Image 1 (cartoon, rainbow, N blue to C red):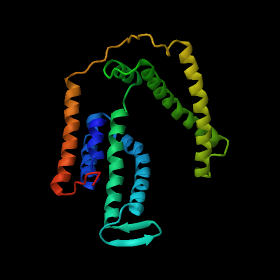
Image 2: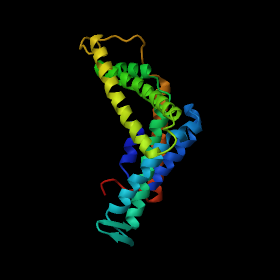
Image 3: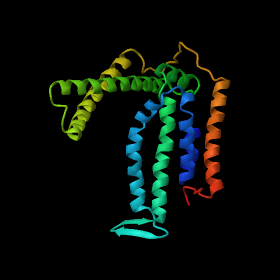
Image 4: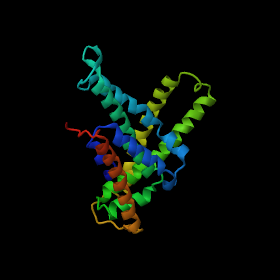
Length: 236
């Protein structure tokens, strides 16, 4: 994720983000994830990316031809280009996360974080618990939708229904998280004593090939931006 994120955070242009998105979409079959599943999981990104773009469109530093002004908002050539670049960058940063974490097993993730990443055991076990609760959260959301529909209150007012269900799920999450934290503490998961792990987690040549592939993707994205002359360092 660091390899696929940091280079894109250093530049604000539409070419590098577009090239990165195109290559990542082309590599979807290699990741073992159905293309339809990827598109479905990208729906939140498609919703949030325009919001980030609109803020840049209205309040970025104006430059070039000015098309509209309203109070502090100014729409110009530079703000339009920046808005497009920021919206595409949101997609370019979010897509690798979907591809890399769509098939991650929580236990294998914990083994890797503890044995390869050398992270504290308490943090690793907390990550595992959080990942497990995320799956339960999705199941509870589906069950609540079906229950509300069976009672005849889930067929109208989509926006109001969403916020009411979100509040209920927030209450469920706080209660369940508190109970789980207490249970894990009672079973000794919060101790600072050295912990052993049942399954060894090591790096192999496949990991090296994968990292080289990530570097190649970013090299192609940034190289395309430099070659086209659209490369724009984030601090400039």
